[in-house]
Image (cartoon, rainbow over all chains, first blue to last red):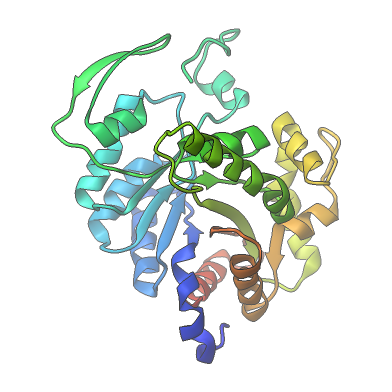
Length: 128
Length: 196
């Protein structure tokens, strides 16, 4: 437990610590994000798995249930999503939660691309 | 393309993979961060992004390799007058286990980290970080000890504050490694973070 007496002197660090939220179910994850905001967490991050609910969809729903917490993705893979579609999704979240979204993106890996996006032997000609 | 669409609300792009010409009714300067693992990725993050997101990187590697590359990238972009005013923040992925049971933490650490020994780019990063591993083999305990902050709430809070104040890391992305009771430990880490 953090020493309550030291809380005020340490509060400058609070904005710099975010929490990764498990995202196995959209409804319960949205509820969890609202609860951690209520508890005082300032930033949450959603990771990505092709086998779990879509993180941007979760954040869109969470944006309607929260008011201050920053919402981040770490990361959304770029390969399966057209950049215009990615932008539309991000702008939609920003409409609900202005200034609270940080969009983390990445290429993911050849493992991911090879198994879930590209046909065999076509691992080099996909869009970046 | 993504930044242009988001920040300018319109794009006229004709490249190798995409042909897009569109104007949107709105725009927003949503920060775009990119994943970073190797030095080139950190350099690129410094050049073009609004933040670098690390993943299972030892802190010392971030300090000795990641941050310098990030700064070099930002400096190069500034020199090229690419609207880069400062080095973007590094958000460091830090795993936390609320447990003083080292064997349990090591077991959970293997479950979480051994998978990366199958991926060559992680093998390279761990090697660059001073933790050479053999593909497909279990990782060594020293790497788990390095990657997972463990202990009771006071020990973990002290370590997180140390990381924020004495290392040059801009932000922490705390990932809970469940040890005994995932729900209880998640509530405790939530409370801990809210009090930092």
